[in-house]
Amino acid sequence: METLLIQKTEKSNKFWKIVVKEKDYVVFYGKIGTAGSVKAKEFETEEECMKEANKLVASKRKKGYIDPIQGEDYIKEKTITEEEFWELLHRAKTKGEDQEEQIEWLTSHLAKRTVHEIVAFDTHMHRLLKDSYTSRLWAAAYIIMGGCSDDTFDYFRGWLLYQGKETYEACIENPEQLIPVLENLSEYDVPEIEELTLYFGQEVYMEKTGDEDDTYFTLYHVLTNEEFEEVDIELDWDEDDEEGLKKMFPKLWEMYGEEPIEW
Image (cartoon, rainbow, N blue to C red; front, side, top):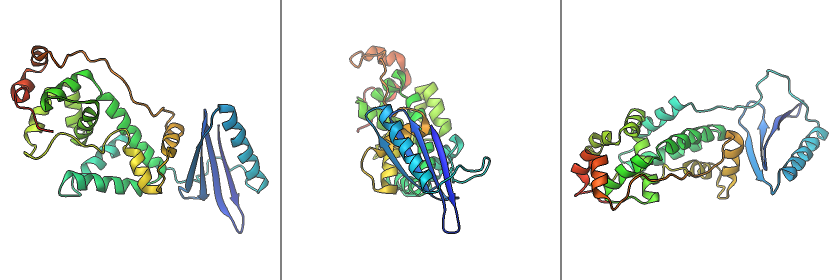
């Protein structure tokens, strides 16, 4: 269910929009032509959610809100394309002397964008991080760092994403393509970025709004039609099978098998 209502009078120029998805709804409201403000709510059942949504719609109509004219734009609903996603990561690399400052700039920059743009950026990130959640890449990370926990693999994939589209795609296809990238690391760097995980969008939203609850996950669910969830994979390698790892990635093993990057 999605309902947009407007109120255009001598004293008012407002829009109000509700989007319902299963047990969640999101409400956008504000001055026509802006992104407005946003509220989200989660219910125990779909019936409760729909009942409350219908009640809100009826209340707005009683206050003089009416259906909009078809074809008119009332809300500023910008988005971020995948191309713009990669461009923002590239731009962030120019915004600080080190990685920490660059990620701080990216977070601050996105926090100034609309909620729709934040969710769009996060949607691209989720898809790409999930695409990189493979057994082969995990084996490569294990060799490179002499061990790789669940969290460390998350940070490793965030770092890989930050290297740019060309490098990301090449290394997903063949993890040994990581070697020239790793060789450019300084002796104090490790291939990890803790911030660029599935929870990055929530951090941006928190900086934008100050909300520290789970509102963002409700927003993400309603606006993307996707569940906010982590995935599981079956590993086709054994950390105790050095010969198997060496056979899987001989070049990586030659460089890091005996002398992994400290982390």
